[in-house]
Image (cartoon, rainbow, N blue to C red; front, top):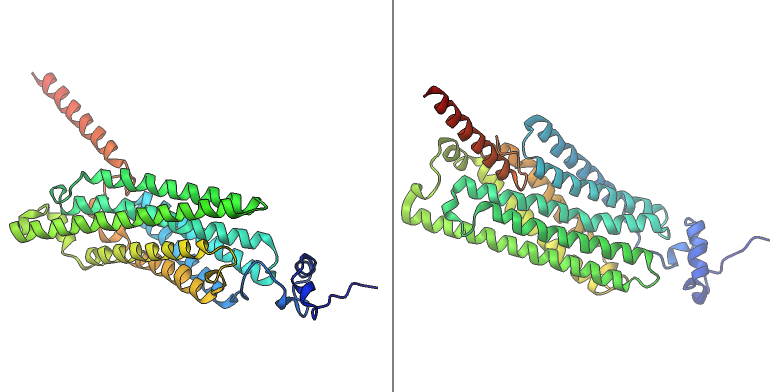
Length: 334
């Protein structure tokens, strides 16, 4: 005689045996009342919608790069971030069909945690180019230092989140891993807030110099003057600010969510998850799809190795080679 579960027995509903039964037969009537990996029934339509949006976004980033061949670092960072989002929502879609299965749950936890960190790295790469577009004199620090400061901080946050996620998934007591994940997310929040402060400081200094000196406060190269006055460039500045704010707010939400534990009140709010984790990151991705730096600030990317963090080193090397060649030609002519 086959085993018949007793879904009227609350003690049995809360048992590991009930969870194992529903893991093997998730569609069995009554399993919806058995505790699973999630605190709610996953909304399939929302997750498929996010899959479609992020898939389209990824094609957009790759398509622009195939056409423009500039902004390599930005494209790599945003593409990795969007790919993580795709994998994360694929994991949630898997979980819809079996909410007791570990694989889909851990895929979505890890990938949706990592994705915004990659996107933030792409955003951080842009500020030094914006400084160059207006003129180095408007910044407190050399443009390349923005990359040197914020990219390593973002990597530290990413490593902490990855380590915490791995420990939380493999340990019988996930609290240590959870605490490390919270530390990584907290470090990401601090880095994002620091970036917004640095960008705001640059904007304020540039505005004050413009009020005092007029247009001469900015670099007067013809290409840069035309670029700064264009609607695409102004749209890109706004898109970058909006994307930065979206990722920061999302990271603050994740810190609050994880701080309450895996069974905390926020973990049980799918509407909050869709809004803060899903919609905010969709907005960040799509505004940068529309106002892509390869299109909106092409003059500061051409010949500069794209948005790679340390491309200025290659530029200096090229300049030194030109000087050596010029000196050699001069000595030969004498």
